[in-house]
Length: 116
Image 1 (cartoon, rainbow, N blue to C red):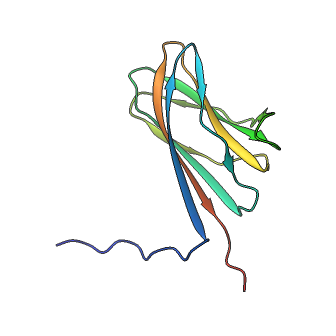
Image 2: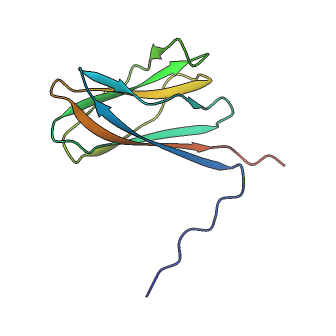
Image 3: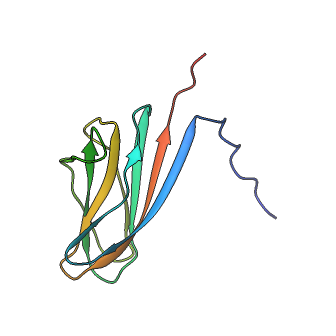
């Protein structure tokens, strides 16, 4: 028996963007995601490689200059963790590093509140 999924999110209330990272020469970054109108943002990171990695968010006012969010998460191979931005900014991306290279899959999940 197939269980029904969650009801669809009303247009504009929930957005998701995904990205894959391949860490070469020590580090890699996702593309920038516009979050200026978001009420809540959660970023899920899964280490899809064979080596441990560290990941952190980078905040930006203009999708050029960045400030590292103070939280850093460490992920073993196969591990998934979530991080929520500590700083508010118009743009955000995820950076990751691994001394032996690595790979990660990233989900940016953004919620906007319903306004009457």
